[in-house]
Length: 241
Image 1 (spheres, rainbow, N blue to C red):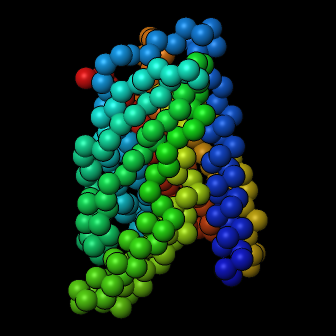
Image 2: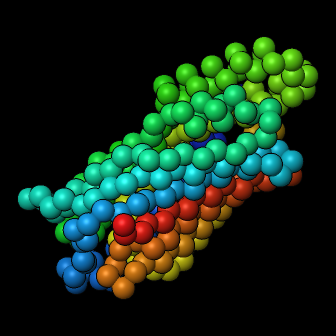
Image 3: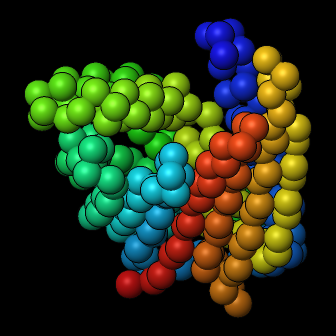
């Protein structure tokens, strides 16, 4: 696949995810203007898992402590990271260690309107940060005595990670903090070169507390290119402290 085709593929992947996410309506409670914004602190958790070749996966669980503040346009959610747990195949341990030590602002600060929708938020780490992490991890891997096959597999994954870091999971769901309970699915065929067939399937599922506040929000993405199937998912949960 050429560089141009790879970029087109990543663009299609990002569009599929963004379309499904933006298609979720705001919560029924928020529609009546009756959302209840807690005054105390909360803990937000995000579990992100990316599928690898052979059924393995990289899994990152981050937690942030935060609170809501009222302002003239609605509300603001502020928070800071308090923990990070990473699991990955041994060959990717260098980048797992970098990820453990990286501070991620997550969705904070997030500006939220009075209907509970995020109108502006932070983004998960990516771009230059991801590229720098990949370069550092590849350098470390080359000094560990790994076989050439292991190194090539790791390099392919790391470079794919850098290219796609901002396409799918970088933006939080717009109704993350006050979701509408329910399920939505979007499936799109991918236009691929070399007679390959492919598709992206995005599934969103959310549950909320009685007051409309987030209980659990899951985004699941399955990418198929020929016989290669790569599942990824993201789960957000929130509990009051």
